[in-house]
Amino acid sequence: METPRVTGNRIKEYLEQGKRFDGRKPDEFREISIETAVSEKAEGSARVKIGKTEVIVGIKLDVSEPYPDSPNEGKLMVTSELLPLSSPRFESGPPRFPAIELGRLIDRAVRESKFIEFEKLCIKKGEKVWSVFIDIYSINYDGNLIDAAGIGTLVALKQARLPKYDEKNEKVLFGEWTNKKLPLSKEIPIITTIHKIGNNLLVDPTLEEEDISEARITMGGTIDGTIFSIQKGNPKQINIEELYKILDLAEKTRKKVFTNIEKFLK
Amino acid sequence: MAKEFKRPDGRKTDEIRPMKAKVGIVPNADGSAMFSFGDTIAIAAVYGPRKMHPQHQQDPEKGTLRCTYSMLSFSVTERIRPGPNRRSTEISKISQWSLEPVLMIKKYPNMVVDVHINVLQANASTRCAGINAAALALAHAGIPMNDIVSSISIGKLDKQLVVDLDKDEEDWEEGEGSTDIPITMTPNGDVTHIQLDGRINSKELKEVLELARRKTKEIYEVQKKALKESIKEIK
Image (cartoon, rainbow over all chains, first blue to last red; front, top):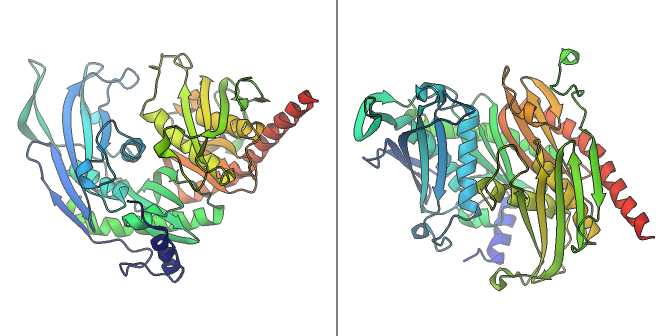
């Protein structure tokens, strides 16, 4: 199931010449395609395909008590499930590290960017606020689930409408919606991951490329260069010069991704 | 402008809380250490190299590093439910990744080096204290390493950079709020771990990396001293 070493070595040789198996340049994404409203029960949803990788993201809302340290703010919960149907590598059972990390990476970019305007999701201070649940499912895994999940999250959030709320009985009328959209800010956190293989940097790896990734940096940020979240993954060190290059490449990549998904964020 | 800035506990912007490091604190372990930033205290113990269990996780080509990070239930004001959670699972893996680049365990096929990190008392920067303790414990266990790593959290409070965030600073709300950037580096300045939560631009981030470079050197000295002291005791 793992990528054979000969394949890995060949990928590295190709990258040395700036080439990839599928003919892309190192800084080139696969084709991104997006579908919205894939679930009519969810408050908002999206299906994102990057090449053969596919994820579905759904947004559900519910009313609950706020956290004591933020009595007038809505809550956020991001979970991801790497479905066994999406790859022979995934098994059912409690979430393992990759699923946990995926959820947390998306959570932090959304939370730190303040993309969801949580203070507008307060119903009654200290008592009732909206909770936003972002749930990510893999449908087909061929590398780069993180970026796909990031795009799916943005599009699904943009779609989401608030359900009706019966204030008298303090009950959410699920399945009935208001015209109100989820309050979102203008600063859109785009999540991109840059991988290091040998001395080369690349974006949007296929599964084979991801398998031999030595280090990766996932960043959430805007197209104007504001960064909200960073996480380094994989066990290889990066020197500072490389890190600067990664920062630049990430910013360029965010811009490219944004032009691809812009029409879904209006 | 920078001079006017007041940190809640009166530290200078580039002042780390008093650090303590001690090697050899768990007699049963093959290696162990304590590292603290002020009242953030972490201990780490190393067991191994030993046979990897479960067997299917054995790697016939090289040794494996396995880290577990956890906080004691009473290490924070409000009790944490014991056992792993999403945060601790992530930090465990992050700690493993931050230590792996300096480890030379290729020669231990089918074996595992277990590093257990526990936070006894938390006042922010716990993962950094944990990684610092773990690096010491690995060295103390005599695991082949080409060096140790040192970890620090850099903070940005509104627009001011500070080092070694404490809890009050983590909750800073003025201006742009608080940005927390834990970084781990080798003594020659390679980054083995970086995370960031908050809001920053790339120019500021470059300053952060320079600051981290300077301050991890300071931590490295504290770690080295602790290791040397442990050898004196053997004599």
